[in-house]
Length: 291
Image (cartoon, rainbow, N blue to C red):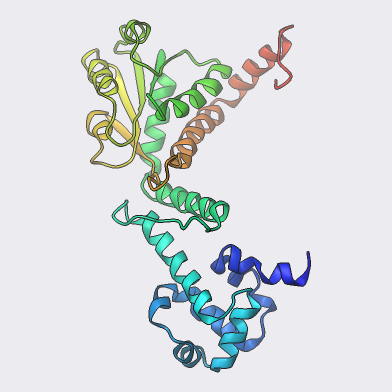
C-alpha cells in the first residue's frame, strides 16, 4: 500500500482506531495529541487548534500537521470526524434516544461495522449470565422447543432452527400465521418451551402465541429489545438484544449473537452427545459435503 493511501485511511475510516493502532509510531508530540483525542472525543465541537495544542502541550502548527498526517485536509476535517464518531457511540448506546444519520457520501462499510460492534457491546451489557444459563437449561429440559418469529425475526428463528435441527433437538419453527402454524402451536403443553423472537411492535399473532403457550403451561422465553417491549412483558424470561433502527435494513447482529450463544451453550453442555449425533449424520449415505 502506498504512503498516500496509508495516510488517507483515517480520513476514510475510523479516526479512533487509527489513533490507537498507530499510537506507538507517533512522535512524542503526536502521541500527546492522540492521547487527548482518544480520551476527549466529546470535546471536538468546542476545541480550536490553539486549545487542542494547549491541552496537549504542543503547538498549533503541530496539531495541523498531525491532522494532515492522518489523511485529513486539516484540523477542521479531523475534528468533524472526531465528533461524528462520538455521536455514533452515543446514538447506539443510549437506547435509541438519539438517532444516527449517515451522509450519503460517508464510509458506509466502516460505520456499519462500528455500529455492529457497539450493538454487540450494548447487547452484552444488557444481559446477565445467570439469566442466560437459566434459559439454556429450560430449553435443554423441554420435550419440544417451539421457535417463533415473524417478518425480520423469522431470519433469527431460521438460524436457530437450522443448527438445532442438525443437533437433533426436537423442535417446531413458526414463522407465519398460517393454519399450519396454528396447528403446530396447538401441540404445546407443560413440557414444551417457546422461544419467541420479536422486535418493535410485535405481530399480534406472536403475542397471542406467547399467551397460548402460557395458558398451556409451556415455559416462554423471549429475545427482544428492552423491558418495555411487548414480548418481554409476556414471557417468563427474556434476553435483550440492542438493535440499530436508523437504516432501512436494521442490523440484527445482536439477536443473531444471542441465538449463536444459545446454540453454543447447548452444544457445550452435552458435547459428547451432540458429537455422536453429528457422527451419525456423517455416516448416512446422503450426508452433505458440509457435514
